[in-house]
Each structure stands twice: as C-alpha cells, then as structure tokens.
Amino acid sequence: MKALTWHGSGDIRCETVDDPIIQDDRDAIIKVTSCAICGSDLHLYGGYVPGMHAGDVMGHETMGEVVEVGRGNSKLKIGDRVVVPFTISCGECRMCRWNLFSLCERSNPKGPKEAQQVGYPTAGLFGYSELYGGFPGGQAQFLRIPYADVGPIKVPEGLSDEQVLFLSDIFPTGYMAAENCNIQQSQTIAVFGCGPVGLFAIKSAFLLGAERVIAVDTVPKRLELARQCGAETLDYAEGDLQKRILDITSGQGPDAVIEAVGMESHGSGGLLEALQTKLTSTERPYALHEAILACRPGGTVSLPGVFVGAAVPTPLGAFVGKGLTLKTGQTHVQKYLQPLMDLIIEGRIDPSFLITHRVGIEDGPQAYETFRDKTDGCVKVVIRPNG
Image (tube, rainbow, N blue to C red; front, side, top):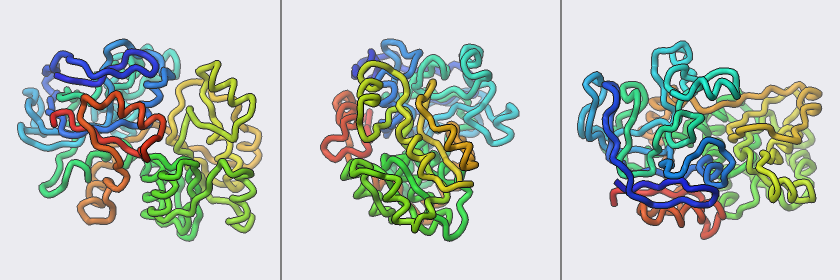
C-alpha cells in the first residue's frame, strides 16, 4: 500500500509499505477513505518529537471502511464506515473506566519506556513515535486499529467524510479545551492560536455558553475564519497584546484562556526567540506565556497545545500570583464521540468549514510543506489515499 512516511526533519515521503494484518482478535482493518494532516504532525515533521524512525507511517486523523475484523470483535462488521480516535484505548483499565481514555494503562506497548520519562504509561497513539507505542499511522491506504471494539464510531447514513473526519481528533480536542474552561453564561474566553484546534475551540466555547470569544493569531486566513466563527480577533504582531486585551474587556480580562498553539509558538521576536528557534529544539512557550499573562486573576488556562519536554521560560510567578487553574492533557476522544456526532447530526455544527486543501496521497509531502508554511491560505489539508 501507499503511505506517507517520516525520514527526518522536513522529510516526508510517499512510499510503498507492507499492508497491515490482523494481529489480535480485537483488531480491525480499514480502507482509509479520508485522513488529514494535524498540527501535531508538524512537530514530528520539524523533528521535535524523539523516538521517530525512518519509514514510520504518519497520521492520526483517519476514517474509512472496515475491510477485515478480528474474531473477538463483535462491534464492527465488514462494510461499516467508521471514524478512528487518535487515542488507542483498551476500555477496561481504571483510566478507561473513568473516561480518561488518553491515559489508558494498557494500550501502549512502550509504556514502561514512557514511564521512565513521565512517571506512568499513557495511551498509545497512531503515528506518533516509539514513545507512544510505535503504531503505524493513518496517512495510508489501509490502517490496523487495535482495540477496535472500543475506539471507532460508526458513521450514520447521509453524513459525508468531511463532516465527520475531524471527530478523530481536532473537534473533540477543541471541545475538551473549551469544556476545561468551565464556561459560565456571560463569560469571555480568549483563544490563542486560530489553527484547526483553536477554531474548534472557538465554536465549542460558544456552544458551551460563552458570551464573547477573543481570538489571537497573525495569519490572515485564520483570523478571517475566527471572525466567521463569531470571535473578535487580535493580531498579536501588532504590538502590546496585553494592553489591547485589557482595553476590549474594560480592564477585566478573559475569564479563561485556551492556548491552542503549543511548543512551536512564536512571540513578537527578539534575540531569545531567534536563538531558541535556530539553535535549539527546546519548546518555545511564547503563546503559553502570553496566555498566562492575559488570563484574569482566579481564571483558568486550558492547554490543548502540545508540549513534549521542558518549556522555558514559563511565568510561574504570574500563574501562582494570580491563583490560576491549569487544565491540559491529550484528548479523551472516545468520551466525546457520540455527543459531538449528535451535534453534527442535529446541524448545530458542520466541521468541514475549515478545510482549505484536498489532495491525493502522492501530493502529501508537498501538502506538509504548504501546511507548515501556511502558504496558499492553507488551514486544513484532507487527503484521500485511495482516490
């Protein structure tokens, strides 16, 4: 089969690799009808995530048609259309029973190695390095799904791939980020980063009752989409962001801030940022820094943005001094699949609104570059590996 494979920083290739096979009775294999490039994939593309190996298959936003099912899997049958969560979860351990699916204790075969770094194992992830299990990803013509009796959700008749594909990751991620804000009626929420997760966070904040959303970015197309989602927008490159946030909130500040950028964020420039960007692989927490400063005292910072290691500098003094709450973590996708599917069925949201590019798998390497560089108005790329 054809797949997009990793070969080092800035080097994604479309190659022929072995077809997946059933390895466990609970497995299923799908023919991938649609997949997407995620902002988290760019961290791999940039070489920021350890444990990647030449030839690793990329991708964790995937859906398709079931073509083979393990003998122990009674949930799925051949021909089912399914969306696949990026988190691989057993459904039986204490974390899964608590609906903390991204913290599954069993699904990551490299869990002991991960525990050496973070203290405990967490769930395996598709296409996201040896540390998270070394599972082949879904930017391919076929995908093996472990624990397929737990993860995938069936797609009802009448819904297109583009309406439901983002249930695999970015829609639940944006929704959980907003939910973590504990939004009350009449509150103001700020969203730093208007990429796909940030845009879904804006939509979700309004769905959960926010009165205002202030969206911060500098890419024109992203700011345009944020406004279409109902947000007021600020371009962080135009100077003194904190003052402008205070001005438009009458000095009160946002009640919660969603930091949807993560470890490759950029600030307003300067020597430290230039050196950190060019000479090290250290995470650059400029968006997190500004989010902490922007949040009102007693408020919440919600962090769906991805970090891997240390993030320096981080203003912990401001965080503690203002009595803020931090909520973060990989998304517990399985928890949100049916409720968010219901929102789509009811017509309350159409997740396809942010798709700007559609390509075949052979064009995947160029699409990675376009998505990374945010050229050609690129906000979200959908790939159809089988034409």
